[in-house]
Length: 472
Ligand SMILES: [Zn+2]
Image (cartoon, rainbow, N blue to C red; front, top):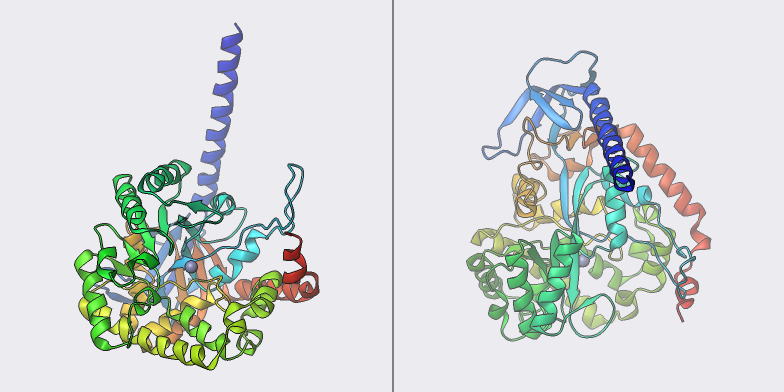
């Protein structure tokens, strides 16, 4: 009798959840948008540009292209405008809550970030998918908040970071430890593995092997252990190098020959590159002067605690010397040479920004990266690919996003001008569709202005040194 009672409860709660799910979908189905007379940059294999197209978005999908207009659809005038797929940043660090003192079960975090505030600069810039390269438990929570519709934010792919040596986080110093951590990461539900600098060779090799067996791709640094034997790092299934800097560290003279040699290693191994040019540009800038950060027009969109950290506890600024100022300047120049060499060798290049590193503000930074990629020798079309189709392919979600095609998720950016003519035009955003939700320029500007206002008002409450001293 007792058993039947329990079964009934389970049956009831299952129905309840299922019923709610159906209801959500039905609500979505009633909402349709039509973008009329728009110039569409499809980013499909043929990359056809369809002029005067009519795109119907129903729920969170692209329902038809040049099909019938559904009843009660909201019309968006696309005349003279350009529609491209939502952008993808394969290298971000989303902020997570901070505990600065000792923890008790009843203690709330010293710093609880507002998830919407983290996501607003990202979506306001038309970035509709990100790969978070050091995800935490809270990142799963943020992802869920977005999926449930409580927060407007990008699709988030989660990577778990593994390092060697000592310290916090996931540390592996033997092949066996590496394999166990990879299995745990898989069981915990992460999508990717981030390899970090202090892994030894044996552990690095085992991690990549185990990850491949479990269907997890790897992206990361090239561990320091490969100094003088870089070629040994290029083993099967090393998926992507997360910074051009990982190569430049192995060049003594920053020569074109070195760049070509590195490109061949990556090409022969099927390893992709995300150069993160904007990261190195920001490192070089702040080494010159911290005022570069202080005067950045995008600083106000960063949480005041991070602003304080970037301005007062910044190692690039602290360690600045004439030698490393000129070293970083040369590094920026060599990064451009690297990108050109990798492009010429046919290595797929994808846009990542390391947003969260001092100076690099998520969302805005992707447009900076696209501009830098074009300066380095990519065509505007190749730059767009680096932030749409290519990352979608690497992430394994190219059937769902990355192009404008019927049936795909409605992640779209409407622009005032053609980005194929000038890549800077990706910044001229008229509105963004994110998972079928339409946010026009006014709405996005309001969200940004509100965020900036609160961040500025709270500035004095968040001093990096005071808060982090609580740790001791
Ligand atoms: Zn990073």
